[in-house]
Image (tube, rainbow, N blue to C red; front, side, top):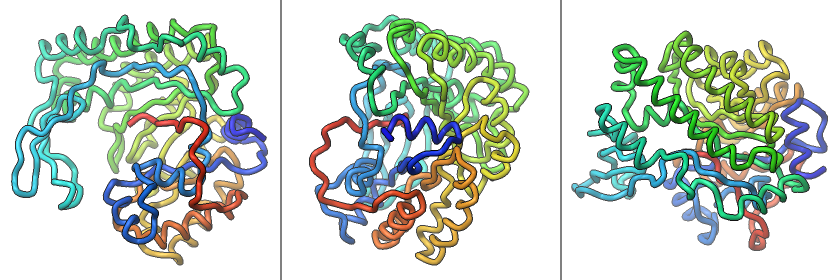
Length: 384
């Protein structure tokens, strides 16, 4: 069974030769720790180190019609000020933040200013960085790349983007929340522009290729639920999701759309499904009950992730118990197990290797590590 056939059959809840083998990467500090505990130094990168050392399916990709739907250009990442233990930086979304120096660990940034604080800020970003007609949004050889999608033995993905998550990054949670109350028409205007941008870019590939899955990122939930009311979500976002997912299904045969959102997603799953988004990822076990989602929606929704990363910290016995917890979900079908977020630096190399051995045993894949020949294909990079 090819990688493409295996993934699509699994997402449909059909029988497969084995379950796909994906991982969700690790923190930079985790990889640094592992280099001191046995991971060869030549394996670098928060995703690539794991994928290439352990030979996951995430290395089995080739050319595909990559398009750009976000900021273009993005903001330059630069250090604005250096303190004893912290840095003041401008990130790729234009936000100014105070972050801990890498040698002192990792922490959530303290944001000092966001790129969009006024409508004038939005209009400048819209005109200078969100121009749907920017020729750099589509590769010059797009027609050639499209032709390859019909016979490829690896899945074909396309970047969609975000309606809430990007606005949150550009405005901050507090300002976006207040604006949703004070000026919802402005938020709707911004979401409409992002939707229009996606559709105008996808017109360049309409009818020319076979897309298997659209990739979305939102991160719009916390431990109790969404950062926007379900009623407002349904009004502002669901119809716009549907315009995009309908277009890609009708013009490119795109059957699946995967949504990356942390936190408690229960109140939004049905609404995402209504908008055409039908794969949920990474299912943080501390906040989301994947069994409840499976019971409610059945094979209408596929699931990825859900292995509680905290078990990797606790040790081998906890890892065994966590695999026992998720095994019934795996037997139902339509589920691809991996850690429910990036692996934190509290996890030892020994524990992670044990996790990988046990997971390969569970999904029916031969366990391999190290001595990987240089890849003949291009590794897929998911939305950040």
